[in-house]
Picture 1: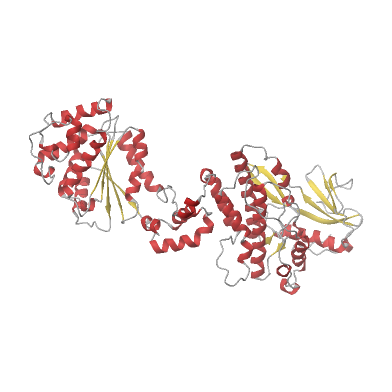
Picture 2: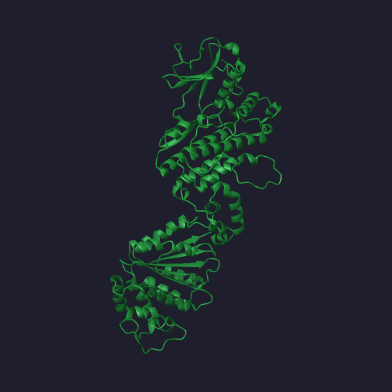
Length: 608
């Protein structure tokens, strides 16, 4: 028989009472085993994994039945080979009945497949369903990319199969599909939106219980469905497919309340399904209805499902929505957005200094105010605690005396030990090392501005030394600088590595910068990492910090530099998605606004 690939028209005069002479047809002995027999069709399958569908509907004109099959052939030929659809080989006539030959689609229809995962463990069951949902959304996206709208997606029209560890969804029953080429743009968008809504219904059914939704479609206003034949510009077979769906339309109750085992749907997935169900409203002309969150293409829904699958812990997180939660501000997740490269560099420096050991290592983090420099450095506290390491931090500012920052940072560090058992082996060992470094006298001038260090070493004893009123000790002599370096040397060791973090070095004084140089050149210091941050917009080439860093490099000391810039748009989108519990694709417009208003500075993004 002649079947036009574009229009699907058939000349019935070319059909005889037999199967035909096409080499793709089955042999004359028969169609094979009958696998389905109903009052509208009979389906055969032979050993070569080919099938024959014979239409036997007595209530439908024979010409219309031929038209259905020829249209399915046209759709199958129109779609690229990469699309997972049932391949129609030919349209034939068998004993006067319309029939088509096709390549058999391996797997199980979705309604039967769901029953096989009902009794699995909750998390396993959910992940399996999520993989299936991703496969279905991928096929819808491929159909749209190939210029075809399915125009009615049902549970028994989806065949799921496992290939190379992933699910593949093959669409069958393409007689109602619409070839979009040559149609009006608005109509094409309408058809894609209907598919998206159907996809939402399928996913809702997949996760909410798995009842068989065969041939059930949500009702759509008949006025929306009926377009004039003229609008199809000669594509009468597409008009037939579009109208056939309206005739088959039945109402479907939408509920996105629970997974098939009765557990509540995660909020992120529920948001995705709800947005798909609202997709049709995007194409409707509703005045004053406001902007609705919905999908405009299946590819975005597929990518969001894929993202959920890559982070199942976040997806499966149960959200408790009580009155306090509704009244509270947005809870920004603790995820570290857009700093993976910088974190990798920082951990490389960390491992070089504290794991491998050897000479001191120095790293400087630069960036604009609010870019997240301090937050980046604070991320190493976790792995440092696992190694029983020590973290000493000080912050410079315009308000405080810069020469007081180092002594106060060290004093605060020892203040934490005062609440520990002084007989702890770690404390005893550190006390002896510091004793060897600074001597045994409690009247040491070095201790004047560090009362916690004095208590750590000597307890609450009376001394004759008059306390300094301004706390400036290090500035009084080179010996105090030397002793400070020796205390650092005494703290850091293989069993207890040390990180010294100095924030906002653009306001550091010459004394601090000189002590930094002395630390980096001291041969007795091991398992030590010096970290600093500065605002790059406030440090120029003639700044004292720049001069000191250049001096260290000239002396053969490697200074690692890590730059923290603005967040990319995708990073802001991930943050907004986590904050709103919405799939990433649905947050793009809001994220674009936030990014443009804040310049990608994380502090401003969080405040916004």
